[in-house]
Length: 314
Length: 311
Image 1 (tube, each protein chain N blue to C red):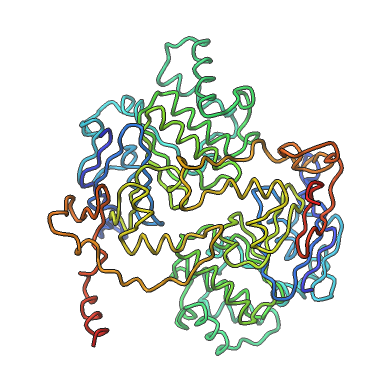
Image 2 (spheres, rainbow over the protein chains, first blue to last red; image 1 turned 90 degrees about the vertical axis):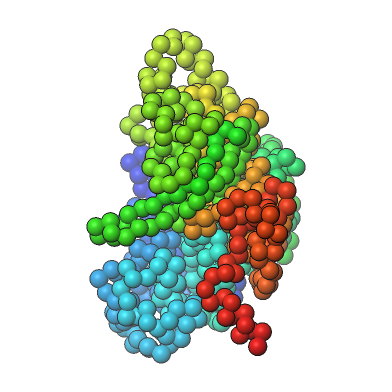
C-alpha cells in the first residue's frame, strides 16, 4: 500500500467554532493506482488533498493517521513534514500559473528549489522530463511571463514530479483549461504513472467524466465523509451509494438532449459542517432514507475494492 | 427573427499605445428567434463573451450591425428601454451580490429603476411569481444574505430578476460553469422552461455537453470566426468541420473513454460543396440548415504539405 489513511479528521478553526471539513476518513491507495477524488464544493476533497501536504494556520489535525510506504506522516508537525514534501508527496496546485517565481528564469528557479532540498540539479534529466511533456529545453532560459498558461502548467507538472514522489496529488489541475488542453494534461498525468515517475496518484476534481478517463478507481466524498470508492467503471456504471447514483444521473452528456430525456438535479443542500447532523449526512436529500440512517453507516466493502457508506448498499 | 447579427466584428486596440489591433470577432452573423435557445460554443479567446457583451451593449460594435426586431440596437437611445427587453446573466453569481445587503436587494433595485409606480403588494406578488417561475420557494430565499444561499439559488435569483422585466432575450454567459453538478442541471432545465414561455436565449458556453443538452441551434466559434453552425442535432450528429470534430473527440464522456484521435483527412466540406450552396459569407450550406466554414485547406503551406505527402 502506497498510502493508508485511517480515521483522518481535519477541522478548520473559525470564530463560530470548528468546521469539521474532514470528519473521519479511512481509505488506501495501492502502488500504481490512480485514484480520482470527486466531490462538490464543501465536500472536503481539497481539505484532504491539502492536509497530506501542509496544514495551514486555520487547519487542525484533530485525529487519525496517515501512512505512506509504511512510514507515518507527522501531519501536525510542519517542520518534520519537510522530509516528505516534494520527495515523497508532491502537489500540482490548482493555479499553477501563479506557482512560479516571476523574478527568476525557470531554469534558475528549479536549480534553487533543488538546492534548498539538498539535491543536485541534473540538467540532462530535467531536459528529458520537459521533452516528455512536450516542452523544449529553451523554456529553462525564459521567465514565467514569457510562457502561455498551458506551458506554465506543464512546467509545474515537471517540477512537482522531478524527485519521483511516491504520491502525486493533482488538485483540480484541469478545471481552468479548455477541453483540448484538458485532454493533453490528463494524458500527461497518466504518462507520469506509466513511466514510473510517480508511484500513485490522487486526482482531485469536480468533474467525474474527466477523471473517469484516466483513473483506475474513483472515490466520492460528501460533506466531509467518504460516500463510495470503487473501480472507475463500476462507480460510473453501477454505483451503489444513492448520492453517487443521483450525481451521475444529473450529468448531461454529449448526445443527451432535453427533449429526449430531462435530467434532474439533487434537491436540497449539503448540511453545514459547523454543527453537522448525526448519522448519515446525505439523509435529508436521500430518497431511500429510513430510520436506521440516524446512525452513521460504516464505509464497508460490499464487493472486492468497492466500498460504500450506506445501509441500503449491503 | 428577433435578434439578428449581421457581419459583426470587434477590434480591440492592444499594445503600449494601442498601436496594434486585435480582431476578437470577425464577420459573425447568426440569428436568435423567439422561443429558441442558441448555444454559442467556443474555447477561451474565441470571442464568445465579446459577442455576448456587444449584444448587451456593454462593448461597442466595431463593424456590422446587431438588430432587435429589425431595429439597430445602437440607435435605441434609451438604454432602459433596451434593457427591458434584453438582459444578461453571468458566470459568477457570488460577485453579482453585495455581501453587505440581503440578496433580494437585486429585486428592489429593479423596482426603483423600472417600476417606481407599482404598489408594494403588487410588487411582492410579482417577485414571488418570478421566483416561482425559476423554481425557488420565496420563503426560502427572501430576506436572506448572499452567503446563506447556494450558488444555484443565487444564479436562479438573477434569472428571476431578469424575468421580472418581462424580457424577450436572455444572454446567459457561462451561467452554470461555477455551479455544482447536482444543481447545475436544474438551472439548465430552467432555461428550457423559459424557452417554452417564448423567451429567446443565447447560451454562451465552452462545455459542449451542456450546449448539446439544451439548445435548438448551435454556433461554433474559433478565433472570432464562425466555423460551423446549424441545428444542434445536425452539428453534433454530423460535424462537418475538423475543429468541431476535434472538440467533440476531446469532451470527456461518462460511458466511453477517450480514443486516440483518428487522423482527420476528410476533405474540406466547404470546398466540396457546390458554389451555389455558399449562402452566407464564408459559409457553405452542406445540408438544410447546417453551415460550415472552410477547414483551412487554402491556408499557406498546406498545399505544399499535401504535395510532399503524396510524393
